Structures are given as C-alpha cells and as structure tokens.
Image (cartoon, rainbow, N blue to C red; front, side):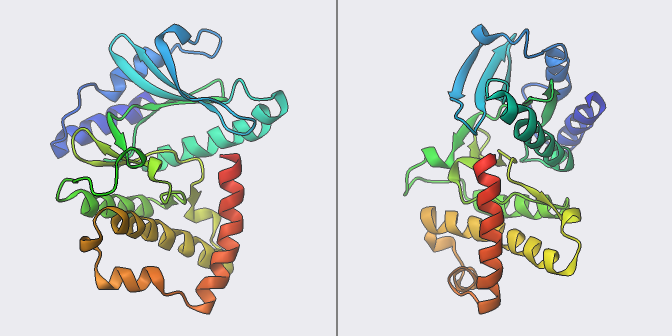
Length: 252
C-alpha cells in the first residue's frame, strides 16, 4: 500500500498538481492506527451511524487530515458481515481508481471494519446552491474524470447524489463514496454486460443532471435528448438496474 500511494504522489507531481501533503507521509502517520487506539479526541463526526450506515469521522492529527468510514459501532452481526464486505468492495474500487486525479487516495483499511481515505478540502455539490458560479472547466473536467473511472473498469453508480461530487478548493472536481460501485469484470456475461453498460450510461446521465441543475446553458442538445428519451429496451434494463442499485445503496 505504501508503494501505491507513493506512486500516486509522483504521478500527481509530474502532472503539475500541487499537494499540501504527500499521501505516503499520511499513510506512515496512519500506519499504526487501529480501532482500539482510535484518537476520538482528534476527530469530529461528519455523519452519525445508523442501523445500516457507518459512522464517518474527520481525523485531524499532526497536521494530517483523513476521512474514516467506520462500521465498528454497528450491530455485531451486521458489521462483521455486510460491513466487512462493503469495506472490502470500496477499498477495491479505490485501488482500481486511486491513480486517477480526482479520486481520493486510499490510505488503508483498519481492522477490516473501517476505511481511511484522503480528505479533500472543498464543498460537496449538496452544499452549493442553484445559480452558484463554477470554474469554467469544472463540468468538462468532471466528465473527463468519469471517462477515466470507466476506463479503469469501474462504474460509480451513485453520482446523482450531489454530495458524492466535490468542488475542491483547487477548483477541480472530485468523486467520493465508492460504496455502491461495481466492476466491469463482474458483468462479463452478455445480459449482465448490458446492465453494466446501463450503469455506465447512468454515470454520464448523472453528470447531465448536475449540469441541468447548475449550468443548463452548458447542456448540449445531444445530452438533452439522451437524458430525456428512453427506448423500451432501456426502460426494461433500467428497472433491473434500479433494483440492483437500490439494494447497493441501502447497504452502502
């Protein structure tokens, strides 16, 4: 893992992206962190847990900030079955996409029940009101980011939730919360591949939906037609997709 985050640091430096803290340095700071020695005094809760959702912490220690997704306080059976499975899947998504600028770094999995990832300074789109000004290239960059995620064999599946897209303090887009994501190698059979392609299309539809909300003048006619017109085959596939996505979102 340390080699992984080191490589990402070097990649970003070569690309000209400025980072206030190297992911490798952060990983070393978090290396000894366990749930039993979790420094709650140096954390604040961003989202409280529910019966099916993990607690989300912001850890700030020695000048380092990280997001911790933590199932350890959920019910025993749930956290040791669903919780461990979701942490494993989300970590897998980060490992597949972590080389991409716009996806937070995965620092480490903690005791199989929690996930430590890079903190992205900025605002999620759920905090930004309609009519707000965005950087000129923000939505083009967001679409390019989705392109790169798909090229890595991953569909996010929950981009319509505006809180999963961040306008960084550096004016760049970031995508977070990969708990509902799916992978192309899980959908190799012909019918399953159609469903996967529907999820891929939905990621792009989500970008169009966000643009319609904030910058409708930047939505092309082709995007509008694609967003509002659905064939009968697409409608049937969407129903199957909706059942799968709802199941993923409920547990993620």
